[in-house]
Every structure is written in C-alpha cells, then in structure tokens.
Image 1 (cartoon, rainbow, N blue to C red):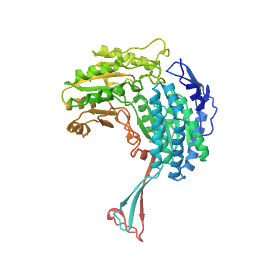
Image 2: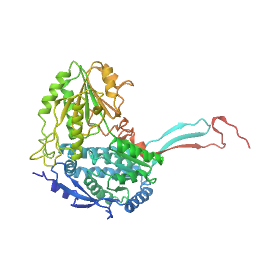
Image 3: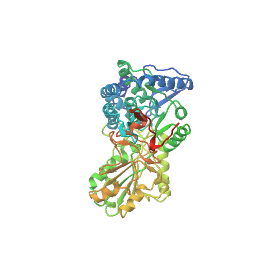
Image 4: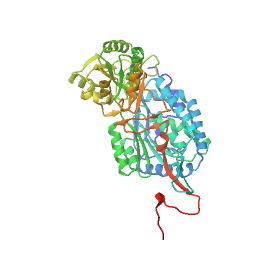
Length: 513
C-alpha cells in the first residue's frame, strides 16, 4: 500500500519505533512502565510504541509542573503570549507532517488532519491577543473613600485529558489559553493516538528552549485510564479539563468534585439538524452529509439525527441516498477518498451492534451499513456510512454511537421538531436549516435548542475557535477555546481599597469599642 510520505513525516516529527512517553519539556523520562503500541486504523500497521508513565515518575512530573508554575506565573502575560505566538509559527512549519500523522494515527482524512493543525495555529493567534486582554473590572463601593475592583490570577497546574478523535487540537485549545493565563499543563493524551502527543511536545520544545521557558510548563504523561484517574485525583492540580465519553466524564467529574477541584468536561453529543420546509435543500444536504460522515462519524459534533419536515422528507431522503452512493471509502491520506476508517475494531463492533439494534427496534435502512473487506481494508476498521428511518424515542437513537450512522425522523410542526431535538440526554450541537427569520429566532430563543451550540443554515460540525466550545446536560457543561472561556483557567479575586482615614463598615453597621 502506498504510504503517502508517512515515513518522512514521522522522521520530521521525531517519532521513533520506540518512544518515551513522559516529558517535562526538554527532558524525556525513562520509566518502569510498560510499552503500549499504536497501530494505524488506516492499514493496521504498527506505527510505534510508547512507554507509559509509572507512579513514581508521575509524582515527579506533577512536582516539576508546580515548581515551574511558581516561575511562569511571574512572567508578564504579553511575554507568555509571545512564546505562544512562536509556537503558532512552529506549527505552521510542521503543519503538513503533523496533519499527516493525525490522519494516519486516528484515521481522519488528510484534509481534516491539516484542518485540525490549522485549529492549533488559530488558537495560538487567539491566545496571543488574549494575553493582553486578561481584564478584570472596577466597581463602585457603598463605603465612602473606597473602591472595588476584580482581577484574575494564574490558577496553577492544569491537567488535560484528550480524546482520540481530535488528538492535537483539543490539547492546544486548553494549553495555549492556560499558558497565556500563567498556568502550567500536564497532558494525558488518548492511549489510542499517543504518538501525536510526542510530536507536539517535540515541536514546542524547540520554542521553549529558545525562550528559556522553565522545565515543567508543558508536561506529557501517557497511559490508560488508570493514569487519567490519578491525574483527576491529585490535589496539586486545581483544574482538570477532560474530553471524551460521558462515562469517562462522570468518573472524572466525581473524582475532581470529591476533592473540590474544578472540572471542565467536554463529553458526548447526539446532534440534530432540523430541516424545515423552508430550507435551502442543497445547503441542508451538504451540511448533513459532512456532519454525518466527516471523520467517519467520530466527532462529538457529528450529525446523528435529521429531523425533517414531512413535506420535504422524501426529497431529502432521496438526495441523501444519491449522495451516499457517491462516497468513496478508503485510505484517508488519499485525497480522492471521502471517508476513512473507524479508530479500531472495538468501534467497528459498536457500529455493528447499533445496526442490529436499529433493525430490532423497527427501523428501516435507506442506505444499509456493513464492514468492508478486501484490498485496502486490511485493518478491519472500514465501514459503510448508513442511513436509517427511525423514531426519536428508539433506545438506540437516544444513545451516541461513534460511527457514521444517520437517523431520519419526520416532524409536522417546528414545536414538535424542537421537542425531538431536545429530547436526548446530550446537549452539544444543533442546527436548523430554514430561510424564515421567524423559525430561526424561535430555534435560538429560550424555548428553542437546549444545546451549547445552536446554528442556523450551517451544520452541527465544525465549530470556530473564536467561540466558547461546549454543551449542556450530559455533554458536561464545560466551555473551552474562545470567548471568555479563559476565565476557567484563572482564579478570580475581588479587592477593596480604603483610601480614606477612617474605617466605615459595610451596610452602615456601627461597631464601637
């Protein structure tokens, strides 16, 4: 099989056949941990192995991160922003090989891999500007000759737990913001795509060395859920930002809450597009198609449900059927293909189980699914994107299946469609396709979508870094990336200054001694 330059990319990124998986910046630590292997879902081949972090080394990493924080917090925020600016430039230099590694290690298309690295570059640009805008505010005091103000200070060590589907972008969303805020970071990447963390650390290490950044500002630990649990339980880490499944998020959230720490949770989605009778159908089909099959349906913002007005239902169904038959499935590094593999064979089994349950609950397939075999599909991770006609209350529809399965649901009134849209436990992303302002506004109103993201005339997938990203309900309630999401990475302090010569008490209280 043609490798599309992956060997060259691995060399450029400093990825070896055997890699240490624990780093505090410039230093890669040897541990007594076992090695885990990273196999590509693209061709089933071993990319490389990574030594996991043992308990002793974990403690050393956390100590180093805390020590570095005591120095890093004193660096002026604009100077911290300058370091992040240089990271953005380094990422521009390594965009092609890093995008290729993302594609090869987790299976998304090369274009999506490049897009993910571009998100890293964009968040660097955002963070640079943010470094000069960590604003508090001034308030009037009720006491004479007093003033009040509010300010934000660096928080401490931030633990980042990321998922396989965005193996580099989610880390950058957190790390770049945390660094300009004056925090240090410990990143625990997904054990399903660990080599991406090695590549990222190698890229930024050069920048850190040139700028004299303290050892411990950027730390990497590798391992399974056990090391993630230890990270969550450590009282030296005031904030844990975790992206992944609802099950994982509940475990992390419970552990962090038990020590009264902060948890930023970015969990599952069960995202829907409402297609109105007033929709531009060509736009609707385009948005639904990418939302459903992009990244082989393995985005937390992937489109799972199409809630379609009965008057255009058959037209939408037929257009989707034709579009799906034109999809090319294969090696994601080949830009002629639209759909790559699922992450591993466990994901394939979950996909197969979902297809069985759809049939068992009475659903019918517009486009049947199935696992692909033969030349080019040797990894066993390639599946056919499927479309099924269902009812919203089917048990399988209420769940998030991380695979390219799209559900079609009829509706009569917009009120009914919104009830369907909101009638799941997840609340990440949502969209409506319509040309009527009244319907747009209803969808975006208090009585509309209950999701953290609500779009009009674009799909559910593909959020911009300038907005705070996150969702409600079982999605976890966290917000990261843009807008004022930076505030979670800082501690907030209210200050009162008495510039008079007496000490009046609040609320006019008199207390004479």
